[in-house]
Length: 251
Image (cartoon, rainbow, N blue to C red):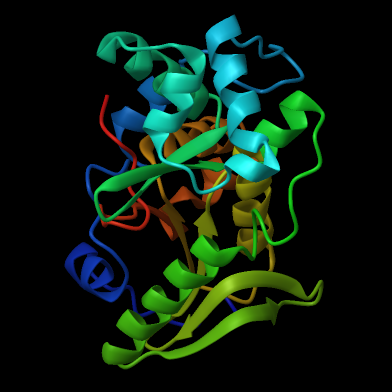
């Protein structure tokens, strides 16, 4: 693509309709991003994470092979926790560090532990978790279906550019859009976005996060990168809307 090639840039309304509803997602060109970037980084290299004893005990319960899929109340009963405010603080602490997500399945709330949570405990995650897991594939499939309805040609797990960098979803239409779905590792997701920008193969990069904490950490990482600062007009952020299968439980 040369500098003389005109780009067809969709409006924000078109992007919202093409991808997902941007529920209070940050605009990288706004002052909001700068404010978020001023928050303390959760990067483990500069600030090691130390969970409170109760949060660590909860996490250890959640990673036990026999406990996967159990309802939240089972964990609280095992830990002897009855206070709603204490439960809320523990959930928020673990979510803030990118260790868990609460999933609702009907009336039951269960815990999904991200790879970062397993790594904190020094435990190997079960196969199929993290990138490429069930939740990841389900959301990517739904995004692909929405884009097809909008007339885009879509390719899942597509390699782009000379480096053959793989993107979660490539949408070809009025412009070429690389879509990355983030579930846990903010630093890795930021690297993915930067690699997409450098590829020379897409006009725009869309990052979709499943929770606000992850979205904030990703923008924190990007705000420090020169490539992103220069190309931020080509990046859009979205928060995956609430649904029964991938929704954080409210404290």
